[in-house]
Length: 280
Length: 305
Image 1 (cartoon, each protein chain N blue to C red):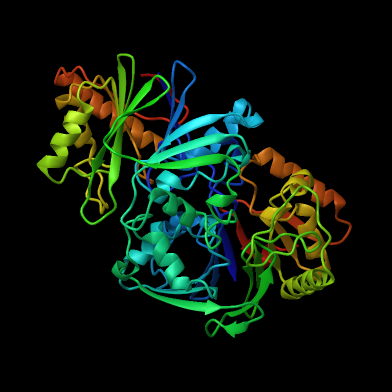
Image 2: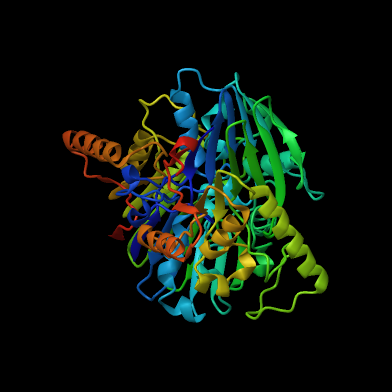
């Protein structure tokens, strides 16, 4: 299983020279299975460029198929969906899985996002590709040779946010975003869910030292502690803050790597960069 | 009047090396007239504008936000605009009146769970919503006059003219041309070949065009939708965007000082936009000055030829 980042920025896209190396598109990660499976985690604006590149493959001819795992429906995780040409080509098949919200099903949320007041698409009915919505549950399911399991990480009064674990053969990837470990219960669940993963992709826009107003994100240190306790091989932080420049991210990565080296931690630590292809 | 351009891109923001010069942020334009601060559209450019306002020695406390319409690329910057979190600020937000949903509700729904974690009531700035319509002329404050017209765009959009004693700017970021498709509240089905317009539709298009030309008449700057090449327009007339040629025709007829190509297509690189601009300059046989709007551009009347 290979993984490629198409959007690693959190909150809002950040075009600009100072963000180019890590990338300014919002959350979207693609998993490529050994059997040709395509699994997409979230559809932030990174999905627009992923979609454009898929045009040259079977999706351009209307015979592509993808599974989309949606963690939750904040803008930076969904707004890219309607733009690429591939979603408007009849014959392509999109299987969306994700949580229902406090205000309606996943399908209703996407449909509302595409309603005429917000989008010239005028609703899901006008997305030309065949699309289906499946409410996510803790029951694992298969996408070809890939096994997908999911875990709800509920937050205060908001709609639930789900984490995903995708396994192929002996390799495993865990994707956790937009969670703040406010109580032991959530921490223990996440720990169990991430146990022994080869790669953990975890949102971590800020460090503990930074005094920022934030709506519910873990800090880099939380992600590192989770990865270490769960015996994860490699941690890749993403959902980078909008003000975080490439140079700042470089400095942040080398700082934590130095610390991990001094602690003789076996954890491989990196910050996700748009375009990077990772062998899970 | 000083005009600063913070976002030029249409449809969705793009973060790519080959698009840095014109910029990847979606539509946002700042207009300053004395102490008055007017912002046209709340695309992702609004975030950097908010940061720049924060660096001013005495930033404006009253901010007038004129929204052409609420498609995502025109509102996506709003929750990242720092002044909305500061109690000393007043935001006067103007947008199209609709029967289906109030402007306040449209913004509130976009910002709250499950799409975002923000409740309008919790914002510390004082927000007022003003629902307006096309064909209006009103005094925004003592220095600034605003006129509106209807743009030809899916679910309708507003076009704005912002006028002070010394200058006039006209802002039409989203409009189709006025000959193939008449947009209203209903979705336009596009089958690949244009269907004949009814006489009523043709008349409505002609009236809309005349009103757009009137709105732009004699303006110093016309910022106008130039998203498509002719080939793109032929394929996607139902998205409600113009070509640079359509933009130039309106600008020439209205006799504006300078036309600024705007709402750049998310697929167009800097080089392609350069080429679109060169093509229009070559095709233009009037005095019209043409530029392509770029992020960071500043417009002052004394710089006009």
